[in-house]
Length: 158
Image (cartoon, rainbow, N blue to C red; front, side, top):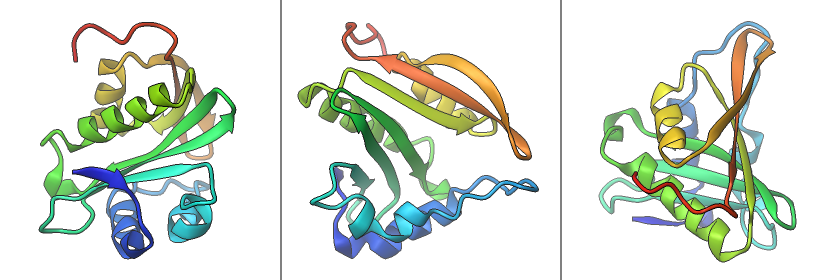
């Protein structure tokens, strides 16, 4: 089940973030400041959103975030699924949920970036019609920038 994150999900969100990290390259730093402050970053009154996948048995097994950049544009971020729960459709369900929210709230343009090592996430993004805009170098590793225009019809097959 995909639902909005709540204050009580804080520990689970940090766990998913930590277990989903790409090995750190020299000079690269993502300490997850936003996920460590769930209330300040994603809960109301913030306009940003974080959804979690909750299987009922284990609290949080996945997450995806959305940061509004202006009235009709946003950045998709923090797609993570615990390693033991990958390849079960959870990442797809999280992206589906986030895109539905965007369509329902007139968000027309989405951007995201991801590391080249996140091959499973890249496959999900491409299935939903995200287009590779560029590859850029960051300290220690390349980063891929994707975009999706939601004012177009969604891809026919997923």
